[in-house]
Length: 481
Image (tube, helix red, strand yellow):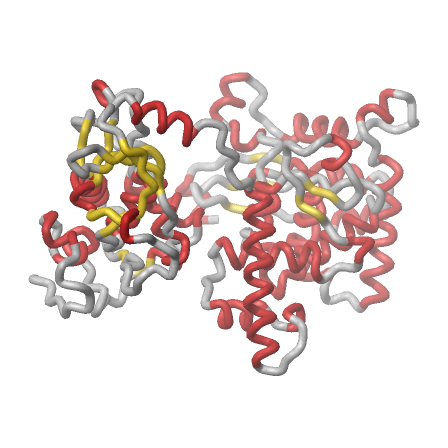
């Protein structure tokens, strides 16, 4: 069926000239002015969702098999769009097409028509420029903001042709979204040898924003937007808002990076007293910083924790309980996410009875649990010096070894996911819970320790994992159980 299109953009948009159909309808199979019920906005996807979509459609990190050397920007954009069309990655996706002029200062003498812009990839397409990166371009479009289309660096020859040396991926993204003039600061030269020199100089030694820096900036941006809204409406602090209201005010989805980062900052920092605020720091920070009290240097695993639905249900009660209990047990040490997962698993598996207790009963149980754990939670160095107790990670490793039936190297390689100490979710961390159970049952009432036991969980691939041991069962049997 032919898609009926109601023009809402400038008719001179360069898509029409490049033969992909007006405004990419042939690539996305969507009319942006009349989207189908199953259409999804690219900007509504989280970074992780887009990455999964790219994996599913086998989108390349770098565009291969293209006759490079010297190519015009429209040719390169066409090649990227062809790849998107072949993979189907943009089917039913609404792109954030440019409908407004940029508020950035763009002097007329630095603006160049897209058809005058070229890429010099060097002999055989090597050494002069990076190849186009379709995944990176998608991420740029996902995060598109008209205020952030910044100037690139290029060389302009005496024929008026402009060769991009820094800003290729940015130019591709802008071209796909409808920008027909690009802004570059140009070196005036007819010598193509200047291109690889400029490319290397502009792209060497750059420091990318770290995940922790992105987390902090996203959280601050969201907080500022909420504060502005609250002041305008004569209301209180942003921490008084429930998260549903935050999503509504910021027009974000629950899985979008900006919301997850705001939520992380709020629960870890803004909602806690000064003495209990948890600081995320880069993993390459100095040792003193990484292991300071209330610091955590495992951003990626903390992100996974905040994206785990089982922990965030019921107003994040599992998250909040685990953080509070962690700091009661180890108030003078850095936060280690591997340790934290033990408590997350405890509160998750036991919430059906634990949260039904009144506050005094909860407090009584947690005090006994703290007393059971704290004396044996020593590090390897302290344990080796004869502290009287085996280091707790040794206890956990022993418990893990006893709990897993696959002892051969071949079996461990085949089932490596179950042996990973860095895995963030219960199916891959059952040994942590097993160790906690073994540890507790020796130091508290047997009946209380038994409360920690969860019979089994079935993973997405049909594997049945039993709490005290790993049992591999066929997918058909798992479904029946």
